[in-house]
Length: 162
Image 1 (cartoon, rainbow, N blue to C red):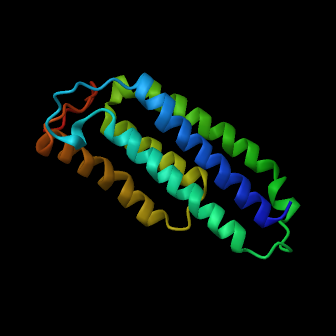
Image 2: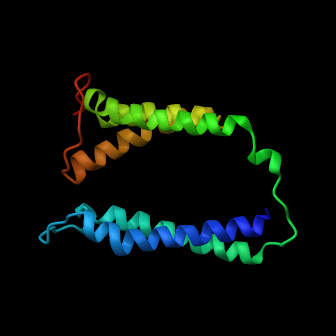
């Protein structure tokens, strides 16, 4: 398969998924009260934001796919590495563990553990930055949502954040 064909297929798939999310899934399955004062706090804001980013990614993939040299072939050996399936299974296990640990550890601690596990599963080139982000990003998000936006963030039984 050529790089051009792969990017065009992924671009079309991203656009189809974004259209399905925007036209079917979000309006039918995400309920939002009509009296939400702040748009950022509306339950539909972030799904629509992610849908828009997915559509933008799809459009950029199509754009770059049409511009790339059609003669460039993908290395079939890279696509068939045995570790790829193991990493995919491990990522699914991390997702399940995250959902199971959320009531016990709370959202900030669980997100820290999930981020660290995912970063090291995929062997990041920047482990120090990954560890800093593992701690900083969930704490900053907790501080914003709990103290600025006034949204209750689920806390676990082990640690109660202020």
